[in-house]
Length: 238
Ligand code: CA
Image 1: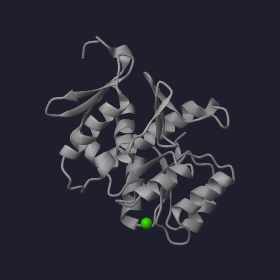
Image 2 (image 1 turned 30 degrees about the horizontal axis):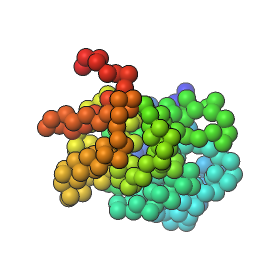
Image 3 (image 1 turned 180 degrees about the vertical axis):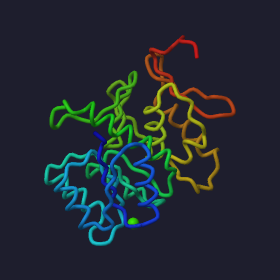
């Protein structure tokens, strides 16, 4: 059976673009164009995932998210935030969002996030209540809900963008990620700061994580971008 996705988005062009592409991927998409209707649908019908805009008429996305979680609705949520609204992202993740996309975003990237969140939610069904969402890579433990990282159990202080770069790489181990991918995913499509920004953040990440022999490494792919190499992949060709 097709997985059901609720799109709570008041911008008609974006809502149409999303539903069209989600249907093409085999999902069953339902749209709510205001906050009140969105919340009602989310409370009444079982969905597998919710794409939740923050700025909405009727009731904003953060309020919807808070109410859903308070009602015990654990449906994974990807919030759609305005550009340069780091505060919305942090608030959203704090209120129980699973991931976020910064507008404007590419559809391919969104579909990848949707698939990843659904995969995690299926895999996490046996997770006990209260157990933490954590990604373990080598000596690192990454907590996407809390924007926290530990190395060998010790907290590492990362800036939000450094955390997002790390999370993006960690979710794609062994895959070459171009600087453009990272720019679009972390800074947004129309960011004008240049690719040097990506390099600066990666370099700072490497220093802060003090990557040792047991840890994953962020490898530079000359002229292209970066790749996260897991410790167990050491010496495997390709
Ligand atoms: Ca909106």
